[in-house]
Amino acid sequence: MSNGRHSLRNTRFELGLNITIRPITLDDAGGFHAALDSVVRERRFLRLTEAPPLARSLQFIASNLASGNPQFVAIDGDEIVGWCDICRSGEQDSEHCGGLGMGLLASHRGKGIGTTLVTAALNAAQGKFERVELEVYASNTPAIALYEKAGFAHEGRRRRALLRDGVHEDILMMGLLLS
Ligand SMILES: CC(C)(COP(=O)(O)OP(=O)(O)OC[C@H]1O[C@@H](n2cnc3c(N)ncnc32)[C@H](O)[C@@H]1OP(=O)(O)O)[C@@H](O)C(=O)NCCC(=O)NCCS
Image (cartoon, rainbow, N blue to C red):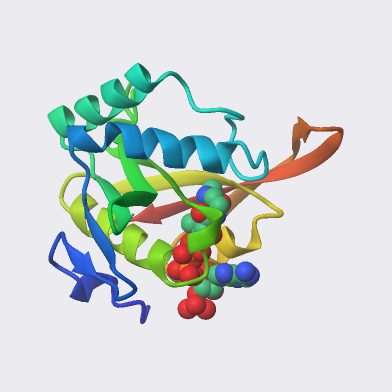
């Protein structure tokens, strides 16, 4: 794997274009909520179709901070333009597993920000999780390419698992074993 994942040890990165990647804080709740809402309203990539109430975002961040779940944000100027989190499974006997979620504003895709976000989150997950897993829609070519580049393996396909706006979609399961 030549993605440089193991060479990025710091938790704050400057990407150029005035983009900073850093761990989330409670003060980011509003910006995170707005970014999430923007991505889910596209209806193409994530289960939600609108963000939950702002209080839920605040609760989500607080819970991640309290439990040490990695959650990073990408910031352009003072705007949050993306996020990546790895949340510990609540299922009995799967507590060693984390579920990865991420997204970027449409205006900020294809510039390497997603790669840096996932790298930061996976570095932070080392030693905390044995396995990171995710689901991705089969039509989401950029996300699948990003996850493959980060070392995720294809683990299964839930055929026609989604029916949105009259269109069926397969859901792919991917996983990464951490050392
Ligand atoms: C998926 C997502 C996070 C990727 O982040 P990104 O910053 O756009 O991706 P990067 O620029 O870091 O590119 C990573 C890799 O993805 C692939 N990729 C990026 N854009 C692509 C495109 N338009 N078509 C095909 N592959 C693409 C490339 O392999 C690229 O690696 P390379 O540049 O070394 O070849 C981002 O596009 C996004 O937020 N999409 C909408 C929300 C979403 O899909 N979330 C994940 C749900 S599972």
